[in-house]
Image (tube, rainbow, N blue to C red):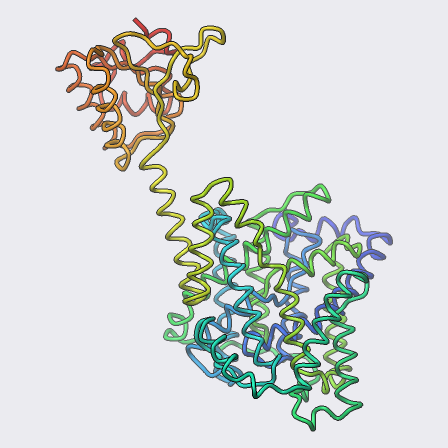
Length: 550
């Protein structure tokens, strides 16, 4: 019973030396990767770099114990960091004490939302965020994240707010003011990261960048020549503290908290399921919500901003041999040791190197292939992706994802309001009824229309059905029988039942008899309650179209 709520109990019971060997190597490699990434993502969120390390300690241990994935690497990620900055920067100056206070409260709120969803088994809600919306949002957010680092990469002051066009315009206007040494370090870092990722993937590129650029700054006194550096990073562990809570703060942060809770969970569960499938075990979505929720709640008491599972680090964790959540615990322990003894090593780390780490990390999130694929397979999904992408890029993060959700729901309603329907004919060789537009050789019957509806019927599409039948009757004025094939109708609402009832009676007055074939049990139960069994006895209980044809 305990393992249902604390999944780590299962793998701890069977833990052995082979597991530890794989976990140790993976934990060390991910820690080396996470230290510079965590600092970079904290800066992206508008927070002091050390908070990225804080968010990579206690939260990781909590998730390792409560999460259902054995290989998911939890911690700061670019997407959530951008959302933190986007939501909190409207309330306080980035980097200020008030900003930090809001960020910690945001982590608490995100955790409570995720935990509540998990306890009430509401994981299915995220299914309303379609793949097209997530893909468009992620690609646009990746571009926004990359462009937000131009200031650090070029060594010039750029507006921290505004849309992409304003940022690009400002960057072009100020190109003559770029700091050459800063640019050289930034571009050099990008080149190193790309080369190591492509040719030497087993060596963590971010670590090489941190060491190389820090040495360059130290040896050539670049900090005295205008290169911005991280500077003093406080040593020691974060103290236990309670986030400052007020109703005004909660109401102001609620929209971004909901966004982070949903987006963070989707990013986490997507990679967790992919890794679990490779290892042959199942991910419990609701337990993932419990684990992530508890992680963010506890983290908020230890100076951590919102965290979730990351794509790239999880892949590295898995490829490095992680067998259980112990790998994540080892990563957390390594970062705790770094906070205690090695923070001074990051004094000369240039901010342009952190900007480069962020830019290269998010590049892979821009999915152009998916856009072409969706437009090729289903144009409506392609447009959903495009609308979400441009809305996010040209307005704001929250507006973009909300626009995508609304647009995808409108597309869904449009599809269901105008469902696929077909006039059927009989294929004698195969003994089946098929759409006469796809099978022109199908036999039709004089004075009879056979009509299939490929959607449940409700208030929004019943008028569409009536309109289609009227058009068919105009083409075939001698029709005296309509056979409705209900094989694809899974449900009907009261409005659709009443409207169809009136339509059947109207056609009876015109001398056109309506029969219904292949009606499913749940639909039969509904029409029985509406009195159809008494009113249309013998006309709605056919098990096949053949029984109806006269």
